[in-house]
Length: 182
Image (cartoon, rainbow, N blue to C red; front, top):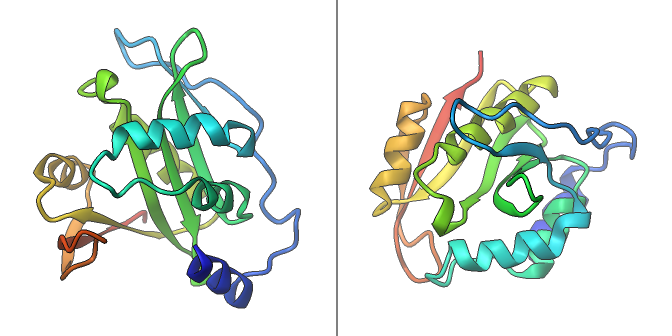
C-alpha cells in the first residue's frame, strides 16, 4: 500500500478534474442475463472489499486500505456488476499509468455468479473506459496456475509476455499479459 502511494505521489499528479467521475448508467445485460454494469466508486468501498474477500480466499485479497486508494485514485477506471436488486456481484479496477498504459489491477466475480460471462463483460467495459482516456496498451498479471483466467484473457486478445517468479505473496508465480487496444 505504501509503495502504491509513493509511486502515485511521485509519478502522477493530474488536475482533479482531468479524470471526472463517470455518471452512473446501466449497460444492457447480455441475452438471458439480468445484470447491470455500473461505475464503481468510493461509495462502494465496503461492498467491494467484502466481495474481494469472498473472491480471493487464497490470501491474495486486497486490504480495505488498498481498495480505498484504488477507488480514490484519479487515474482509476473501475466498474461493478450488480443484480436487479442492486447487490454487487463483480468488479474490475484498472489504473492509467504515467506512460498511459492501462493496468488491470483486479477483477473479481462472486463465486455464486461465476460462469455467466460477467468477467468478460467487465473486461470489455474497463477496456472501453481505457480507450476513452486514450490508453492504447493494457497489461495485467495472473497466477500461473489460474488456467481458467488465462484462457479468458487469451480469448479477449491478451498474450503472455513474461513469467513473474514468486510474484504473489504466497510464493506463486505470475504471468504478465498484454493487449493492444489499437
